[in-house]
Length: 136
Image 1: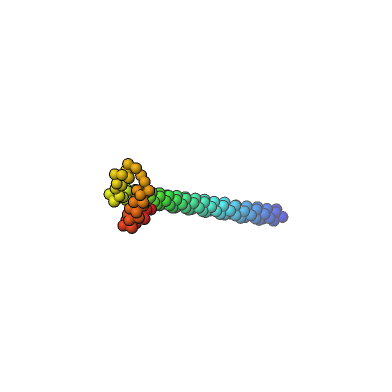
Image 2 (image 1 turned 60 degrees about the horizontal axis):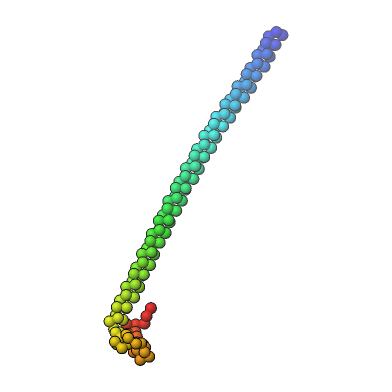
């Protein structure tokens, strides 16, 4: 019976060793899987961060381009307004010069402005506008 007890103890201990080995293999497998999952999660996090960075750069570039376009458009509008103002001023000065050449009041009207002088002025103004167009 001693031998049977030894064999039974050996089988029991062998079974325990097999169970511990089996559990050890599962623990190692779980650790490997956990490390792999952690690596994949870290890689996904890094990829998401890179995509976020690239998107932020693209947004910043688009904003800078829009700002530049707005500044360019504003500068162009300011130049156009300045040109229009200069043209209006030049037109006004040319018209005043033309009027001074067109209408010279008589010496009597320079000294004493009368109704006759006002009528002559009004007629000259109408004649001037017929030639040069109406005032703006």
